[in-house]
Image 1 (cartoon, one colour):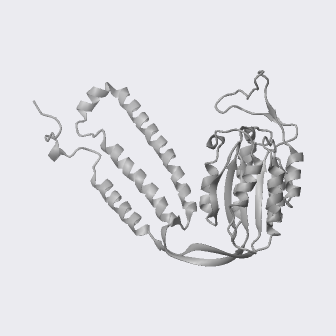
Image 2 (cartoon, rainbow, N blue to C red):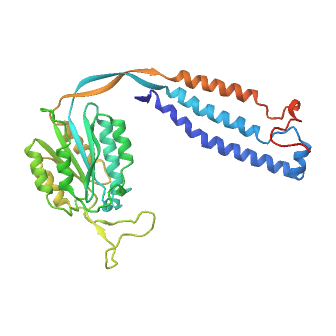
Image 3 (spheres, rainbow, N blue to C red):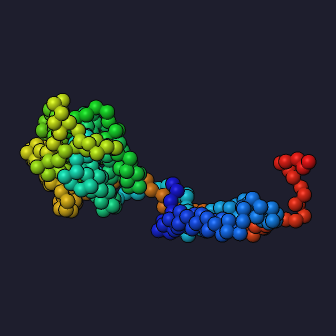
Length: 342
């Protein structure tokens, strides 16, 4: 496993684009100043020792050195010892609705973006728990098997988009059934499904699936995303909205009745995800009430520092940058490797 011990220093990489812009601006000012003295081609003949490319090469080397230095400060490490440890935790499966209606913007910046932000906050608060992720629209499939790898969970979360599923719809029942089958067989550990949807269920079986899960001791919680008044569904890449066959703009509304019925049957809670953080607090409290048990997890307990290789590379680049002169070496002025002298 690769990691950075102090990843905050990676923000230094943001300096690189600014340095590039400054360098380009400086070159522009330099060329502008030369043009004031005369024709650039004639000025080049009057300055035969001035190299056109060496300053760019030297700047490129310094740019790479600054980037590598930020990596050096962040302390790159490789895991060297993998151990199985037991921790007290629960298992949670997230079932996230990614149908087109989740693009509506009655919740800012959009229903889907708000839902993804909420899941990220839940993951950040987890310590010893396991988490898995299912996405659904007209179909449902596992995006992330249940795991304690929170870094991978957030990476998969970022890639979630309605284009992952071509079949439109809201198959909540299928998503709940798939989530129910996705837990580990370990007994005694609290298990919960968190369905995040706008509740516009176009398939049957959602309540039945929640009842079957509850009978197995799995809690079904529902977070309803959106507002009852609804909002139109934007078409990505345009300023238009989705329309029905008659040409009327489609307005998608939060179906709270459906969401509450599923949560009640699944012996969980329902909370509306709006422009506040109330839903995140409610679901966190619900998860914390679940029975915790020993959850076996494989983690790296020892890491080897990798900064030595980065430090050597920085040293080599700095020496090379110092040895490259901005002006052409007069000893090699008459040597033409790539062109013939007539």
